[in-house]
Image (cartoon, rainbow, N blue to C red; front, side):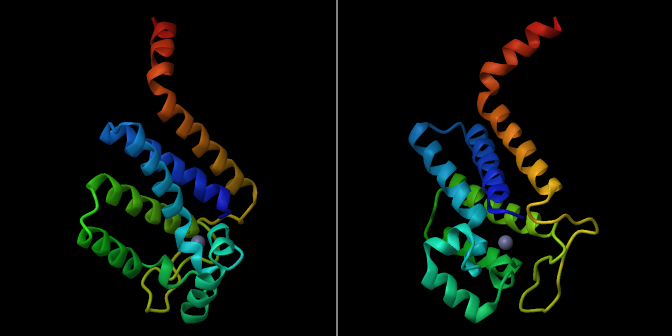
Length: 168
Ligand SMILES: [Zn+2]
């Protein structure tokens, strides 16, 4: 999946978290930022990805050590990050947002033919039975649909009264 699709999914997760936890503005901005970062973070193993370009050295080292779409796209990685967040006593709303961001990334990558090494260090490629091409029509449509969903979640308090007026 393209970075744009991952980011749009991160924004949706951020919007849903804000709605669910009813956060005030400062926490909402933090949640949005964390959601976007965590939704692209697993691609730190790819030097040309959005996050990899920012942190070239770390990205290079991760790639050298593990390869692309292996450790950072695995259940093991998610468990380690989750345990670390609990250990440093992050607020639940941040932990939930970050974990959902990471999970969304792996699920989206499972929609591509290459799949992910979900059970790393076991060398098994996991992907959905239906896959799509990165940057292809499905990928772009998905990003657009998710973006529309995000706008709806964020603007719901303003949109819903209009819709109910229409129906009645
Ligand atoms: Zn990825």
